[in-house]
Amino acid sequence: MATKDDCIFCKIANHEIESEYVYEDDRVTAFKDAHPLAPVHVLVVPKNHYENITDGVPADLLEALVHGVGEVARITGVDKTGFRVITNTGNDAGQTIHHLHMHVLGGRIMTDGGPEGAGTVE
Image 1 (cartoon, helix red, strand yellow):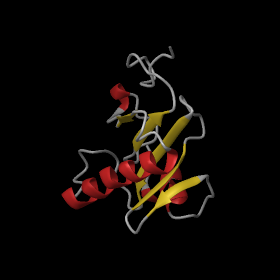
Image 2 (cartoon, rainbow, N blue to C red):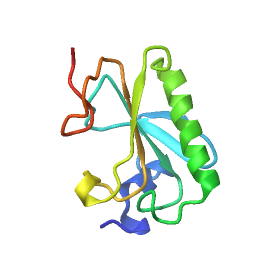
Image 3 (tube, one colour):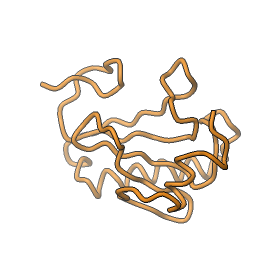
Image 4 (cartoon, helix red, strand yellow):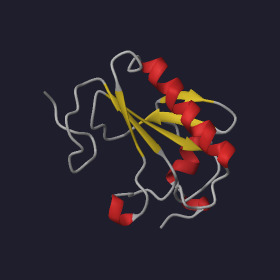
C-alpha cells in the first residue's frame, strides 16, 4: 500500500504530478480520472493523506470533500442531469489507490452498480 511519500494521489493533489484539474480549494483537489468509466468521471481527494474513510478523517474534512463533490457537479453540469458518488473503502470494495477519494460519475444514464460501480448505459 502507498505511503504518504509514494502516494500518487498525494502527488497529484499537491501538484507534484500534473493532471486535468477540475476544482481545488485549500483542503481538497478534484481531477479527471485517468481511466474514466463515464463521460464525467472526476476524483475528489484530500490534500492530506488518509488511507480511507475509516482512517480517522476529521469531520470538517469530510464536509470539505462533499462540498468539493458539489462543486465538481456544478462545474461539469451533471448537477442538472444527475450523478453518482462512490467511495471504495478497502481491498474488498475495490479500492486500488489507498488514498481517500470520492468518484463523481455522470453524463450518462447509469442503471445499476455494475462491477466497476459505474453502471450500465441505456
